Amino acid sequence: MKPAKLFLVITFILMAFSLKAQNYLTQKMSLAVIDEPLSVAFEKLESKGQFNFSFHADIIDLNEKVVINTENRSLKKILNQLLGNEFRYKVVGSHVLIQRKRQYETSINESVRISGQLKDKSNQPVSNAIIYDPNSKRTIITNVEGRFNIKLDNKGNPLLLSLNAQHFQDTIVYFNSAHSHVEFTINQGATIERLEPLEHLKPASVQSSSFNNLKLVKFFIPNKNRYVAEKLNVFQRGALQMSLVPTVGTNTLSKGRTTNSFSLNIVAGYNYAINGLEIGSAANFIQQDLRGVQMAGAINVTGENVNGVQIAGGINKAMGKVSGTQISGGTNLANTQLSGMQIAGGFNLAGNSSYTESNGFNGQIAGGVNINRLERTNLQISGGVNKANSVKGTQVSSLYNEAVEIDGLQLTALLNKTRKLNGLQLGIVNYADTIENGLQFGLINIVKSGYRKLELSTNETFHFNVTYKTGGRFLYSTLKAGAGKYLHAGYGIGMIFRKEKTASFNIDYIASAVFNTRKGSDFFLGNMAKIHFDINLKLNKKLQLFAGPSFNFFVPQTNNENGLASDTSFNPGIKFINKAIATNKTQNWWGWHFGLKI
Image (cartoon, rainbow, N blue to C red):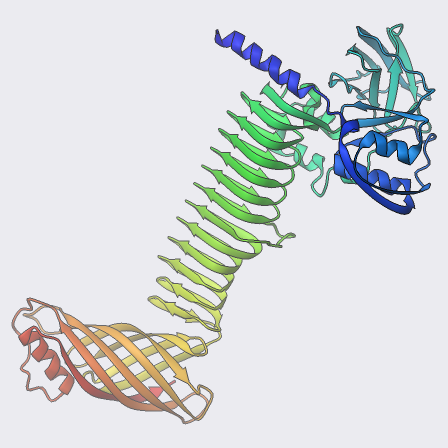
């Protein structure tokens, strides 16, 4: 079969599925209402069946108290029990029409073309009114003179039109075969028939106007389609739909009001919601929720929530929450809540300045930047920058990590920053306002409100040492350098006990590199590790005297050149270092140290 013919066949099949109405009247339902208004019963039925009741306001009293308790019965039988036998019910699109049996109805099996004009009660034309046929789902908009022309395909259903105009009540009008040209006068008061959609079926927290005003939506979706999507008070369901572009497809002009199970968009598509799968070569746009999978070559945008997976070559944007996964080559955006993962080649963003609530695990992986404004983040991995509020997990980046609070790990090649640290920071530069139960490992460690001490000391190996200690209440990191016969520079960790008392104690472990100052031999001599115990005596608020024993290890560099000093040095530590270098064997010894802490 040729590609063109195959395309036509597939389109025909998709249209047949998408235009098939659901018979809500045979749907099995349960209902329990005890001495409550009829409106409560209608709300429960609509919520369970996902349809709208439509009726004239004068024929039913919604305040009438009813009693019913039934299970697994058809909607038609439930309505007969609630309202009696004087009504009949018909399904038109996503509406269940309730009519008196004596009400006039035409049922013919032919197509009728209706042309007409809409006027208000002052005899002025009503422009930009939406004329909608629920049977064929055709939609047109009246011109500046209020005129329209539409073909109605009856196929055994009542001939009717839905009239929707701003500042006017929605109206349903019935026709017979004799009608060809009509004029309507629509008023802001009583109308021929009023639709009564209930609140739970209206768009929720993110209004369609916000979605339709997005620059991406305006670029891809024509004004007429966006206008109908905002103004038409109809919610349609379809099994399948196919679109070439938003203006050409099986859902016609009203596609922004259609929920589909499968949507195939050759270039770009526009739906009310998706409960299933949507595929687009360029872009997919959904006004409300995605429940399932959405895949696009470039852009996916949902006006509400994502419950499933969004995959795009460029941008995924959810104006509501994401419960699932967003994967893109460029950018992922979850405007409110993220419960799941965002994976992007460039940029991930979750939450906003006014919405920070988090629920469930959430993580972000990006080649460039991750920003999570939610109250809690579990995982952030980026090639550049991570920013978050409270991290209960891990932040990993090549350049910069920032969080209000860390309860876990911050790992970067450059700078880690947090206000409160309960965990571990690993980076060249680590900054924390306070450390409660945590530790910093890096070349430069800064704690704004924590344990900070500068030490001046001497020991058995090096005449003069400078040590800087910074950290939390118990754990701290150490930078140390010293000079004597040789030089050393090192890094370590330590613990302090009884910090606020007159007498306190420290245990430190420091690893240092030892360097030679004499010409004629290698500059680097080897590595030394020192474990020492301090007894601190507070002299005043800022000054402490300390002293204690130490245990030392020295591992010489192999293949050292000659030219070292003799091992008869007065300093015991120097003797052991020289011996280790001469014999190329590790040496250890007991030592001592004392000094002042500021």
